[in-house]
Length: 105
Image 1: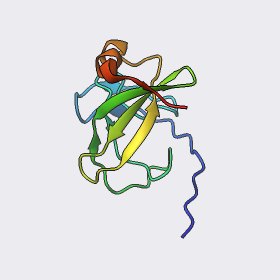
Image 2 (image 1 turned 30 degrees about the horizontal axis):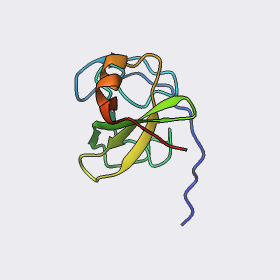
Image 3 (image 1 turned 90 degrees about the horizontal axis):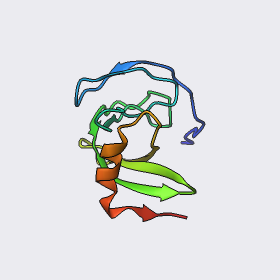
Image 4 (image 1 turned 180 degrees about the vertical axis):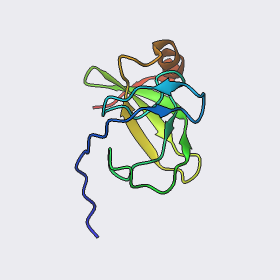
């Protein structure tokens, strides 16, 4: 079975299931800007086709080509995904995670 890895932009607002913050989505929003938690709702970016719906805490941060990325891991199925840090994210929390920051090529 071939999986379509094409990005699908899905503009939607959501309430964070971890901290309760109301988040205004822009089509690229994939985690809460307040607590940095995500939710496992996609099989491929933006498709909303995952039935898992597990919460995904941010585990770490890494830097690649001048951009910061959060590493999220699903508490239900164990899937790990990298998500780009947004300018709207609480950067103090990103810095807190980055105590062990690494650079990836």
